[in-house]
Image 1 (cartoon, rainbow, N blue to C red):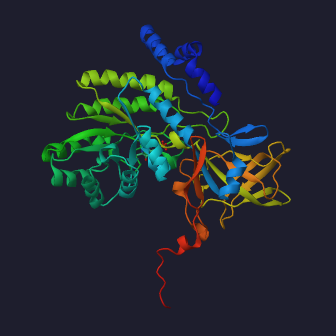
Image 2 (cartoon, rainbow, N blue to C red):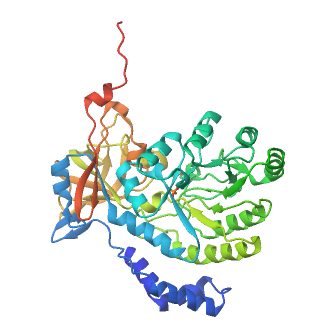
Image 3 (cartoon, rainbow, N blue to C red):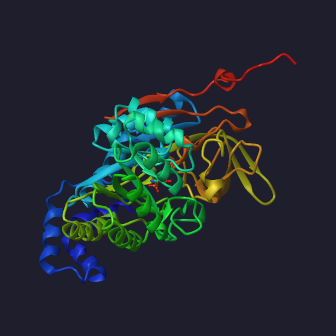
Length: 459
Ligand SMILES: Cc1ncc(COP(=O)(O)O)c(C=O)c1O
């Protein structure tokens, strides 16, 4: 899959084939300019993934089994080079625009990961005041933090103002309170709900009419009325329609809505397209073609800015795209349990550490790191939580034995950040591989952590 991406990016012949398939309304000369631009961009290495080298699974040349040996299991491991390559890919795709990437830190909020992304020039999308505090601790400037909480008490918004964050409001009630309190002394952006159904499944679709997120685009008259009444300085418009959007037309539809809306606001600095860029979770998965998106959306955006009379910044807020594929959850096989109908592989992790399979029916590829040449057999991989806790059903894996090490892929996004202590189990350690070196970036929890903050009373 990655290999295909590499070829598409760097080969003009295939690029023109893509043009024939979809870009017929683009002028020939601008197409040629795009091809030249892409050819001159630095080539990216898309092989940042766990690979089998001489019979041993390795990540950035580090033996995966040795990581489990050193830090124990379950263990989250992140490949920093992959994160940076993904960021670079987005920057290249939108290189003709004034792009600002605001990493959606809800996907993975370890402070060392934040620091890594800061060093690479990313900003932050924070959705709680505590995320904002973590980002500040990682060294982000307040103005580089887009703060988009939803359903919060107004005091959380004023706390964001006090920190100097970029405020993004998602309801009319907050806009009115904001206008009353700040007038035009502090700018704010608006999260709009475009009434577009998009995203991998309903739970991760956030821009449709029945979604709790954003101010409906049909409430533009009320927005304008409040803006005029309180002289509010609205400096940005934002939409995030959902996660795992493979159809680039969704972003073009959003763009048209933005452009129609933007003309009512004279003080805009940016338009924020949110995220939803999908990566592959398994071989053959459809992904968001960010190169095509960069070309089409980027051009429409530049054309709009000419009409608007000023070049605006184009913002995006990738979470999954940056960190999903970079992460692996390593787990030890506790038990192989053959029943008359199913052979279960029971591992030392579960929905407490990676909830996506149970919450979203998400598919995460599983690899038997210990036995790469073993005969392929069918297994159902389950966690050790007292709850139906299936990580993968009917998976073809190299023969699994008790004590083997499994790697669960695409665990970087919404893995650790959604982990819990359910069943009073400890959350795993986290390791970052960067510059060819593995470093512990979070210790494994202990019993003390479970007791911390509990107040024992005499009964
Ligand atoms: C406002 C906002 N921006 C960005 C994201 C990141 O989305 P993704 O992980 O699909 O890139 C989310 C995800 O929930 C979000 O709610």
